[in-house]
Length: 528
Image (cartoon, rainbow, N blue to C red; front, side, top):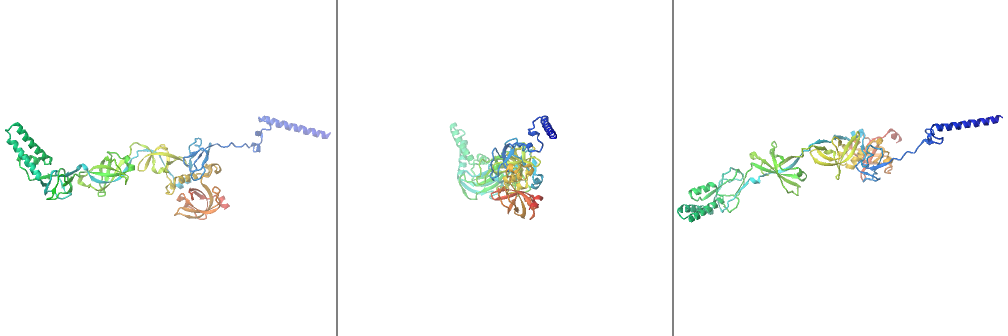
């Protein structure tokens, strides 16, 4: 009897428990088999996470280059996948990821930025030149008949002469005969005053032709007038200077015989001169006729001569790759002497403001130009730009940068003459904080990381010898090797024996460059 009561009690309790479980499942809107009803933290509560979607793959060095499929760059480094929602630019395929740098790294590298602004890009074109006489002011005295130099009034080269001043006297049998011919013809005209009109006309034509011959032989109007008045032929004829100037050449010698057309004197007016400046090929497109030019000469360091460009020659000197440009300027006091060397400056450039950045902001790889635009605190975006006109320190940006955007204009590692474009941007990319970058297993290696201790430091050559552990990304065993520092400041606080954690890249085959180095965490030092 007691045993049956015990069995009955157990059956009632089991039924009550089952009913309570069923009611609980109904109260939560599901059956007892629903996983959502399982206690939190149980195995049934774990749901597999949804796989992230890869938008594109970006260049590991931060260059503006993307790929829809995985690939490697020229240094053998894998392109980095960019996942949906990973970056503020990730939703826009084709836009490369930004470069992130910690504040400490920015200060260490000496990064400095400046805003792109509107400014007029004027510049100075400089050229070497030489003083030359104005070709239009050079006069040559050469008789048109044969004769002899009878007397010299000016007998020194370089002597200044005034317009109309006697230079020399000549005797010419031809000239004397021509004068007598005219005198006879003039007398015949007078004698035939009462003759027939035809005879008068013929004699007058003879006299006029004789007089025209004398004028064509460059007898002065005064000499002709005296001959007409007196009718007497003079034995010698005086040649006078046609202009005021300097005797730059004299071949006449007293008593010498000369032939028709032979140059005896050259007189040059140096009150105005030319400066022929040799402008380099890359600057000739900026030079225009009418531009003002400033001329300086070593002989007069305190004087500045100003002139105007009047002609750009259509030919180029193939040896020097320069184009001659003519500058005309006044020469008071004859300070500017032919053959003097000069320094010519021409202000060129447009007056319309354009968007410009300092020329130090442009990283030129030879095939394209890139600037680093500051996208936020510690974030920089590499952009390819299209450049225009240049001034002394600024360059026009036609495409790629907007007014007001700040660009990087100075960084210590960019000044390093041995740095190239990839190493520079690679140093920035590898300096990004670990928390901001995706896990190495997801994005592929950006440079290489290792830990070790400092063996020696050579500040003069900019190298450090490190005793590092095994490096899995390169399959290197533990060893001691020498690295080159991307920046001299990375070495200043290093001492032999110091435990460090560092990052490095292969800038060229076999050339390993440390881009970041810092004391190793305490845990790592304890493990060593």
